[in-house]
Amino acid sequence: MKKLLVLLVLVAGCGYGASRGVDYYNYEINTPVSNHSEPVPFTVQLGEGADQVGSDLQDKHLIRSQDFFDLYTKMTGTRADIQAGDFVLNRNMTMPQIVEQLRHGKVDQKVVQVPEGIPAKFIAQSLEQAGFAKAQEYLDAEKDPAWTSQYDFLAGKPANRDLEGYLYPDTYSLNKGAGVRDLIKVQLDQLAKAFTPAMRQAVTQPTPARPAMSVDQVLILASLVDREVNKADERPRVCGLYYNRLKIGMKLEVDATILYAEGRLKGDIGPDDLNLNSPYNTRKFAGLPPGPIGNPTASAIQGCVNPEKNDFLFYFTDKNGSTHFEVTFEQFANDMNKYGVSGG
Image (tube, rainbow, N blue to C red; front, side, top):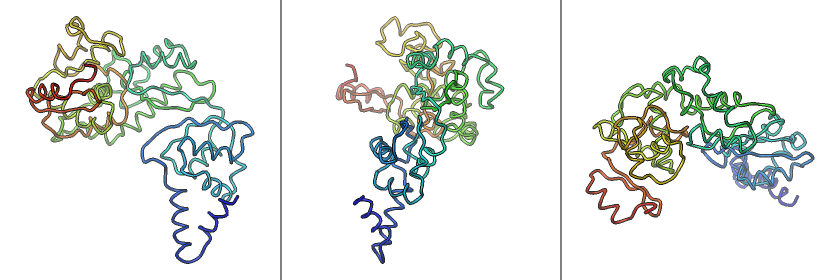
């Protein structure tokens, strides 16, 4: 209570101190912890009070200060309105948005986490391991051609392909009793938000950094980018490099495409793998593979819509996890000798 009184003095004081206090209060209440979307599963237990909820919110880095949460909920009279249940909150939400969600959100829900960047086969396995649904049920549902007529951005997807590349990875909150089709629908809905209509229109026009592309081609390329680089700020650069390779007919040489063709998520690539006679083998065949090799994140999609304009043709990850980019093969070979290669 003493901390709350101090905060009230800051807010209710007079003169310059009052102005600074109000500014500080507004900052704590109306400025999210993060500018980026970071979904966080959050549970309010039955009988749990607002004090404990505030402590849990601070522990999960959804708010900066439990004290300001206490102050806000007392001033707004919302402390008693918080409901028990499972929620998906986000670090880019303001405190009023979080409180509103806890007051009015659907509480009879379950949280489903879809891993980033991986193929549908492995999404399905993770869903089965989590007890959400049988893996084959999910795979059968995402192969249903009826989805195409429900979303305009699926119109350019070849009819003989399933939804690989379009199953947006995120943390979802679904009603209890929801099944695989409900999950797929919210994944497609979320892709429509991440890959906006404006972005989908923009990719059809060339820029200095890339040619005109279709939505499907961007998702194919973004799925490669997601598997090749983990840092979001490097994705526009590596995608610019891929566009450079495509422009001159150079092979993309992404080992993850071979793993996809072999039904693997990870593992070593040997001589036999390099000679695999599959259109997904980008070490053997130039151009894009015939479909996505995973389901890309927003940063990978954005990186391929708005790639960095550069002259790079080569890159590698060193033993410390840093990615190096080079224009010539000679620079590439010299840097690998100098810094070493990840896994080497």
